Image (cartoon, rainbow, N blue to C red; front, side, top):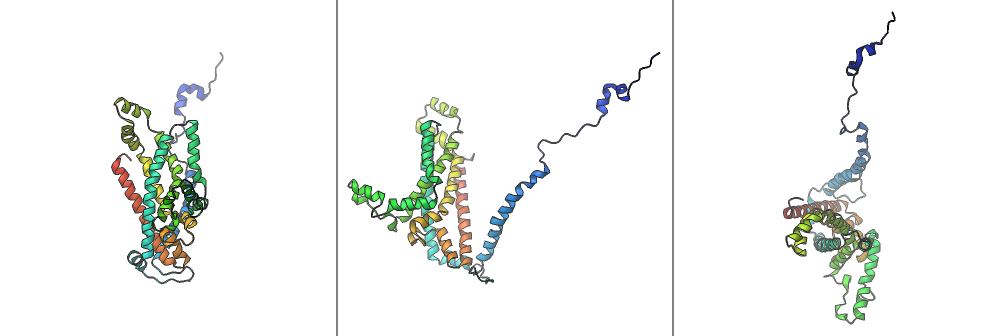
Amino acid sequence: MATTLTSPSQAQGPETADTQPKPKNRNPMAAHPALWLFPIPALVLYIAFFVIPTIQGVFYAVTDWDGFSPTAQFVGLDNFTTILTSDELFRNALSNNIKFMLVVVIFQTIFSLALGVYLTKNSRSSVALRSLYFFPTILSSVSVAFIWKFVYDPNFGLINTVLGAVGLDRFQSAFLGNDNQAIYWVAITQVWFHVGQMMIIYVAGLQQIPQELYESAEIDGASRWQQFRYVTLPMVAPATAIVMAYTTVQSFKAFDLILGLGGNPPKGSLDILSTRIYAGFANSQFGYAAAESLIFMALIAAITWLQRRAVKASNPDV
C-alpha cells in the first residue's frame, strides 16, 4: 500500500499563513529620520547670517564702537536716548520715511488691486498686459533711478518737456529739487517700480474666488460696485495683508532707489532711515548706527503688526 508523504507545511494547511510573523506596517505619516538632515543647511545659513549678526548688533548698540578699534566702551542706553530725544537728522529721516511709506502703501495697493481686477481673465490681451506691467520689477533699482532721473530733470526731462510742448508751462516743476515735494516724487517712482509685482499677488487671489458668489450676488440684484465691495474685497483680504506688509518693508528698504535719485549722501529732503543708518556706518559710528538699526527693525515690526490687526479687524477670517 503506497504511503503519501506530506511536508509539515502542507499538513498544517491554510492555518500556516496565520502563524507566520507579519511585517510591521509603517506609519505613512512618519518621516524618515534622514529627512531631518535637509533643513540643516538652511538652519546654518539662518543662524550665521541672521541670528548671530542680530546678537552682535544688540551688543554693539550699547557701545561706542567705531568699527575698527579692538575694544569698545559700554555706554548703556545712551545711544537710544540720543536717537529718540535729540537727533534731528534721525527725526527728519523718520518723517520722510513715514511720508514715503504712506504714499507707497496706499497707492501701490490701490493700483495693483485695480490692475488685478481688470486683468484677472487669462485672455491673450490680459496676459500681455500683465507682462508689460510686471516688466519694471525685473529691472535693477539703479536702472529705475536713472530712468526716472531723466523723467524728473527740470531742464530737459520728459515731464517738463511734454508740459512745455502742450502749453502747460505753469505745471512744470523742479521735482527732486523741490524740498517739499521730493520724497513724494520718489514714492511715485517706487509705486511704478513694484505695482506690477503686487498685481500678480492680487491676480492669484482673485482667481481663487468662486464665480458662484458673483452669480448669486447678481441674481440678488447687486451692482458691480456692490459685488466688488461685498464679494471681492473680503475675499482678497489675505492678499491685501500680504501686499501691505511686503510694500511696507519695501518702502523702508528703498535705499538704492534713494541714492540713485538723490545722490550719496542724499540731501535732507530725501534722507530716509536706511540712508541715515548707512551714513552712521560710513562715518565709523558703528555703535550708534547699530542702535538706529534696532529701532528701525522694531518700527517695521510694529507697523506690520498694526496693518495685520487692521486687516483682521475688517475681515476676521484672515
